[in-house]
Length: 300
Image (cartoon, rainbow, N blue to C red; front, side, top):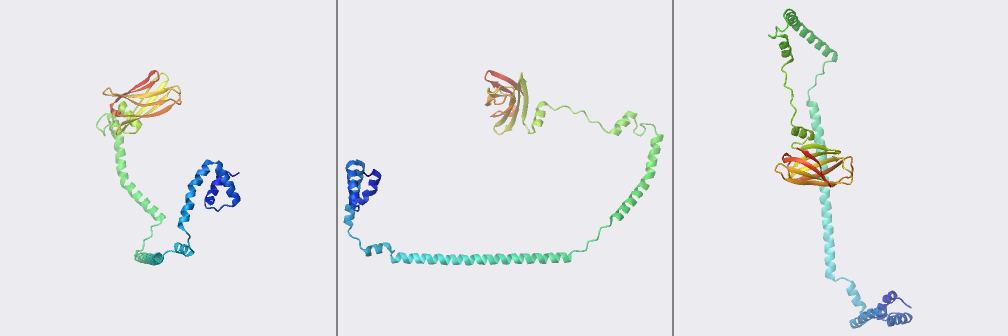
């Protein structure tokens, strides 16, 4: 018994009557039992009628169909010849460009060598530097002359210092003379305000850094200015892992915004990012809230 796949492969030949008698019997037996294959056979049955209408095809007809018309053949040959002519023209042009480039490179090298030879022949002779021994002797002679010229003045200054009382040269008491010798004293530097120190520590102009603590909870908040307000970085420690937290930023006008929220992954320390439309100079305090309410408030 044949399967549906085998029968469907043989349906075309069976429609044209090209099957062997034994195989045709098996196909007919299957078609009598299988409706799907029988329906497909009925669809193919019209093909044999169409082929019968075509009639017989002669060998001359097949040869005409297989060979292209003369006009098409001439057009193909002309196009091929034109492509060959273009290829030869492009190859000739490329060869000319290569020759011109090689000639230019040779000319540049020869010109460079000629310029180098001319410069070396026109350069003046350079005098040799004096030896190290001559330079040492010359420097020692200059030092001796300088010491001989300043010796009388040094002796006079030493005699005045020995005979004059302390402070006479400065016109005041010894303390005044000592202070004048040390030069003017500058006033003690006063500590900068907290905001300026925070900006200097942050290293970014206008940046606000504040720290706070409440019990075991420790937090440091950094607000960096941006065109849209501020970017916030929160360094938090002392909160149990798995706890939820959020940062609220309060401005000078009483406006408050939630700048970010997080879930604590490390109780020792965690860094969380956020953003707010309130600028650093307008921030009055930071509030860290947990699931049960306020954990720590950090004023400006």
